[in-house]
Amino acid sequence: MKKTGVIYGFLTWIVTITLILMSHNSNPYIFNIILDIIITVLSLILGINYLKSFKEDFLKEALVFGILIFIINVVLDQFYYNAVGLPMNFIEYMLNVGLIYLVYPIIIGFMGFVFDNIDTIIK
Image 1 (cartoon, helix red, strand yellow):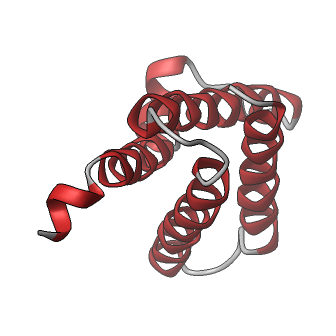
Image 2: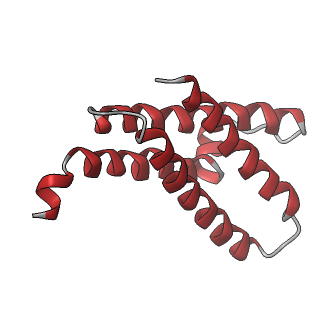
Image 3: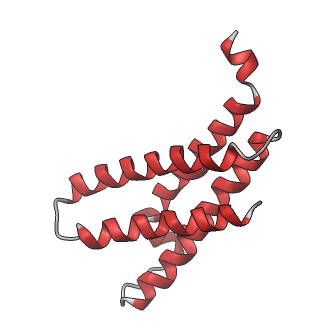
């Protein structure tokens, strides 16, 4: 794991929380769709940027990176929600907010699998 992974993890949380703060009064359905799109695009962009610095073991590195981003987002969210007076227990948080962050390890992990197996996939 590189220091870049931690920086990217923090960046994903900053982008997500900024989006939440900017659109907290908007239509919740549109907000959820936009949030899903933003997280998917961030997964792709940051996943490619992170993985291109490796020469092998892409799947392992991708899974570690994706899980790191997931953990960073969940931990920072817990601090944020408690600080603004919206404390939730962990299960309630995961059901309401946290599950969307599973997109990071899923997409980035799949990307690592593709990078490891690109020769057999293209044939």
